[in-house]
Length: 457
Image 1 (cartoon, one colour):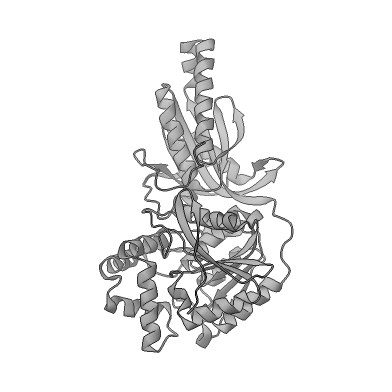
Image 2 (image 1 turned 180 degrees about the vertical axis):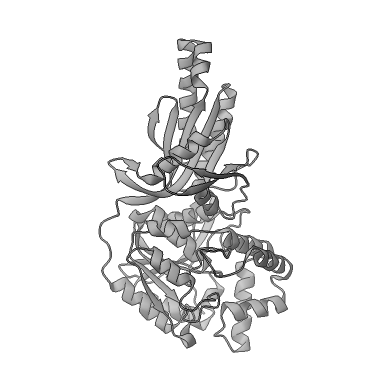
């Protein structure tokens, strides 16, 4: 059986495997749930699904890092998987495409659409689960204890026949024939090793993108099962929440006997959506991570050193900050006195940059505190503004010397990174509605394997 050629893009040195089928004017980038790029073509349902799509659009299928034919680094953050999409788009020479994700892969597509609206025409989310752990505002799925039990089962059983039989029954309940079930088990085994499977499900447990859904401004279609197994209250469950949060999105329930994401009904819904009117203009708002830095005790230090010596120290500090911004793909938005206001397209890079800035300042006998928040920002010329910017500034002001303080939103968005945090309690932020839980980033953490930095000059 013929299979499409496999190509590789590079995202910060990580090889991302992808295939291209079809020659349509539109490009649809597909991130499967759990699959490798070879056996996905051996299943009649997935092959028929992709072949039908490829008759109308150019389909790009890729394995996110840690899965299938792509490289498998440890501690894969959801933010790093956004880089996988960028690298594939760059490699095929496409500036803007539609994205299609299933299950936990839908989270990455949603986050990318919010962070890079200039690169996304339309967004398709099938069976989305925007949060892993059940809570008061998200009454679906496992509680934390249930997740820990599940992770132990994955660690001990992934790949074993009994475990895989049960898992595939939940994953694809429409499959009945033994040979179809055997093939799905093979696909899962080749897509994820036991260790990679544990990482995959840990990311699913830790992820919470609910707060960023309202930042998505591209046309969005949500496909879901009418009898969602995680819905304990009736209706569409998590898919209903996603549709409510994304402004102007539309949802469609697949019939109970056709609930596979690869059914003909799913293809028809996707093609109908892709033929619809797309947003032409790029939104003037974007999901961004803001970083504020501030020198602690700078007035006293300046008085001790004297004006000329202080200017020299401050010049060296500013050069260090700008060097770290270049390394971690940050953008300097503004500089006021001895502090910086910076923008990033992901919180992991912002935290890594902040820690490097704090460590570099110590070498100059300076103490820096940093505040980080992720939220929707509006472009005002070349700069960004909005309540998210104010929130980041207020968080920075509460930091202790040498501390990188972050919002709960930032903590939730670095799922799978292995970053550890210290709880700093709840705070009222001046001029910002509500009460905010804040966390300090572990000072001993190494970010080297967690993120994609700018290539060395």
